[in-house]
Image 1 (tube, rainbow, N blue to C red):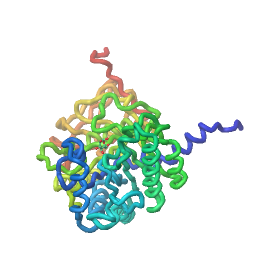
Image 2: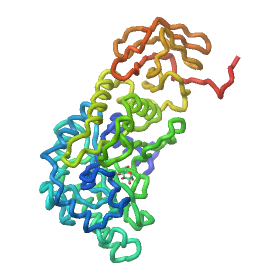
Image 3: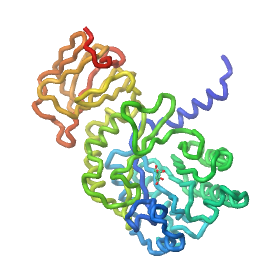
Image 4: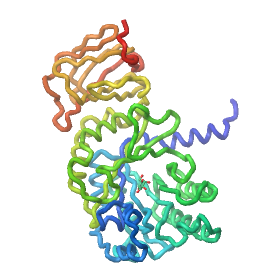
Length: 421
Ligand code: GLC
């Protein structure tokens, strides 16, 4: 047998590492820090030019309630999310864990305890995989900006950074995801010593999955806030879209219309699934740690829906986006190498639903939840499902999944607007 190349081995290891993550599909992002007290977005320090000395006072006034992470984890579980990622240190520089690198941390200031430990314990209690977000950019550290101009400052800042990341990777048991953020102000991975740092991370946490924000591609890409549903990221790279719930990562009150609706979140989940991606949906807890009511309400409904229809997205799914067309009445996902297709019907058509352009023979159509068969007719270019209820049977979100068992890989061709005769 031919000797496997290094690249093959690496690719196989990557695939093995990523498996749970792909199958999980849906995670919770948590942005929580000193900024949560101001309720004006996590960039408030920078956007309002609050001087460091003034901002620092927030470290002593922050007194979160005991163990709010249990409520987040309970909610994540209920929402059908399988993993969490929490900000251990955001751009403001305040460390949420008990660190030896600085006194500017939760254990030594207002909270008086290790908030990262509470979070880790909560994830374990509720059976969720554990992710750490870590901002490389640091507005508080005296060398955080200076490191770009001053070699000694850069060395000190890298030692600090590696010290922080090393602690996070050493003191909390198994960690599943490392989510770096903003690599300002150093211009290259060499300047950040990203390779060296991630080598250390992988030595300490051999199964960990690392994102692409330390200027190296690593395990997955991280499109943010906006993903063009018609132009999903290319095949070949794993990706996770991170999204706010209401336009701010850190807690900031917002009117109900600014919050993503249950249906919008389902639409993202369907389309990302079809494109092979994950959704990391954010909550910004209030300073006391409580979750904004609208997040709880909507996530609870999403979870209820996923409990019924989860088969259409969890587990091994196909990247089918390129093989199917957009449809005015809903979204596609597929499994089983394209032979099981799921049509997430979000605009109910009444008693008949017609789908054009299928290049596969449908053997069976049924409602996903009940398994109840649906009568259908398939002519060359048209599938017509018949005898459907007059209105959308899904009472949770108005999204009903219809399952189609196909004779061959799902493929749909409708062309660019012409009727094919
Ligand atoms: C951006 C923002 C940051 C947020 C992050 C989440 O990089 O700077 O505030 O934490 O996106 O992806």
